[in-house]
Amino acid sequence: MARFFITGSSDGLGSLTAKRLIAQGHQVVLHARNTDRALDASAACPGAETVLVADLSSIDETKALAAEADKHGPYDAIVHNAGVYAGLERVPGKSGLPTLFTVNTLAPYLLTCLVARPKRLVYVSSGMHGGGRPKLDHGNGQHQILLSGYSDSKLHNAMLAKAFARRWPEVGCYSVDPGWVPTKMGGSSAPGRVEDGVDTFVMVALGRGEAGCSPGGYFLDSWESQPSAVAGDVRLQDQLLAELAEISGVPVPE
Image 1 (cartoon, rainbow, N blue to C red):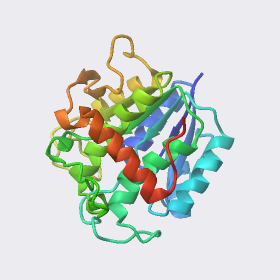
Image 2 (image 1 turned 90 degrees about the horizontal axis):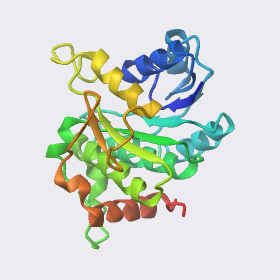
Image 3 (image 1 turned 30 degrees about the horizontal axis):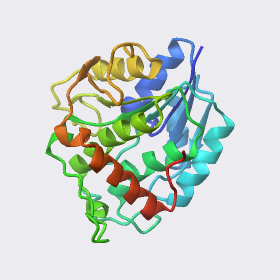
């Protein structure tokens, strides 16, 4: 029996992945952004161990979430599933930074740095990452990354998997593209099958298919695929980590 922590698991792919893992006999710690959503999460996954509450647009709440999550660990895998879509690029979150950047890019970085290392780290990317840009400041101190769009943030997620895979070779670090599937975020007209996305999440979280895959591998439809060349740029990966450390005040642990 394995133990998992899944962010953004009150509905959608996070909730469905949790249900699948619970049905297989595993222990799952859920996460929701507020108490109302926590009730939704509990109702959807009555077999979950607990639901932790934190608004990931708040740096302080994300740090507190990391401390609380540690109490329920250690984990076989942490799935960084929480994310928001377009429309929140310039809307300030609780910490005053743009919500999309804080939830999609900064929160998974913070939780990775602050929660005890699991066997595997899973970052949820998207096929849209191919149209994203790193938006790094290139030394001018402007923090263009704060105005990241959705595609940019999904590129960051693929970069985080590769960056931490290089630093922590003892941890399996991967990014997952669930495909364009009919969830609340994907929309009812999405052509993919939700089950295929859940299959990929579960496979990677359980470590199935790890043998022979690349460090920081990118998975789609339960197979390792090739992300954009930008995601594999080591210099940009290091720059991303440095900029997130500067913005948050949380360095990457050795």
